[in-house]
Image (cartoon, rainbow, N blue to C red; front, side, top):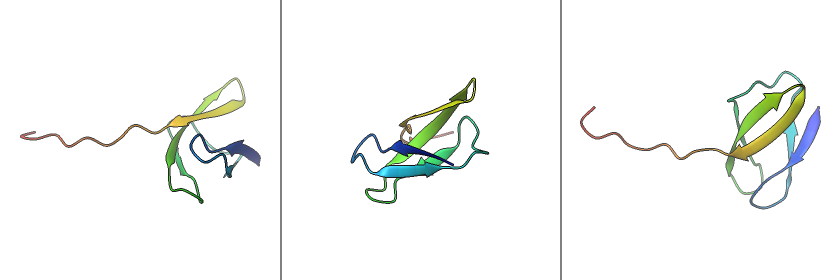
Length: 57
């Protein structure tokens, strides 16, 4: 298991070894969602994009 820091409040976020790119993790402290990126066994996170409403689709 890997621990990364929330990009908003800096709290620890536990990341399972089986995590895959595109998975969304939520910070247990502030609720911010993060998108996981895995490349060459290196795991990083970025702020998850906001879900936008699509009108008329």
